[in-house]
Image (cartoon, rainbow, N blue to C red; front, side, top):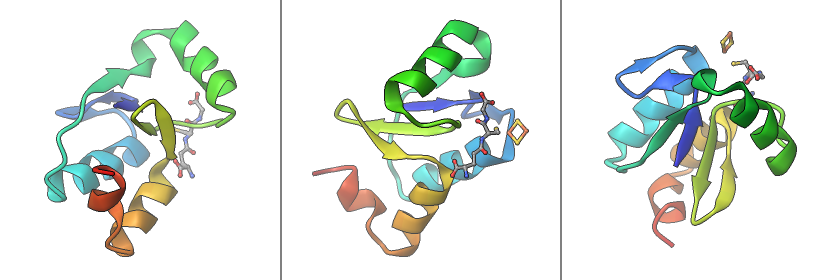
Length: 85
Ligand SMILES: N[C@@H](CCC(=O)N[C@@H](CS)C(=O)NCC(=O)O)C(=O)O
Ligand code: FES
């Protein structure tokens, strides 16, 4: 599940766009939520996850990371395996 700015067809921030592209290129299917549509979720999720920024990618209820981490995992060739453990 990707909490992002905008949606996968129309990301509203470069960081969210990069993660969408990385997931699509790896052939990962994912759900998404536009945090710009809900200020309560936007602020609440940052507090809940103790992670100050978006995008936030969750897998099996746990935070995988934001843009830097997702791109790093992909560079390491570990993105797909991380998301199918
Ligand atoms: N280094 C971050 C970049 C993401 C980032 O800086 N996001 C900012 C600007 S889009 C953010 O979410 N700020 C808090 C907010 O907009 O609520 C990452 O790896 O994900
Ligand atoms: S909305 Fe400005 S950097 Fe993401």
